[in-house]
Length: 163
Image 1: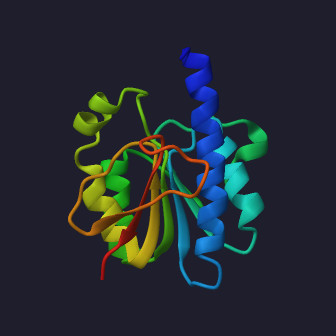
Image 2: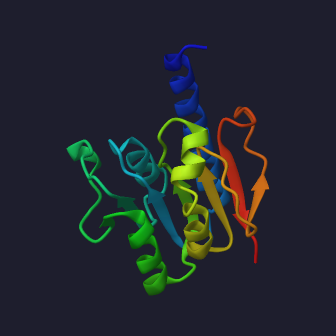
């Protein structure tokens, strides 16, 4: 499969996962956390499908399409290894949904570079929160759940935050 075809399949899986997650958290309190802004496409989709939710976005190097810029007070700028624990100190386990959209594009590299990230995700996720990620997150408090129909195993990952 070409890298272009793989990219298209990843985006299709991502959209299916986000739409599924929005339905899963309907009626549940909590923030939505978008870890990684990039160009802002995923954030833009989240705010469209979850217009009533407060969506906080974490990004080190901010440079999205101007139409996808989070409002003042919803964008947390800086290294997530620092900004996520600080946010957790202020807000606790506040998230109904955490979308981990930080990647180098190489899963083996991501597991090494972002080995610290699952701990911070678990610290922010409310009990039974939904966590989505483009790569496998390993943490005792994150329980894998099957992705929705149409998402191939291993293409995108979903977890629930245990107790």
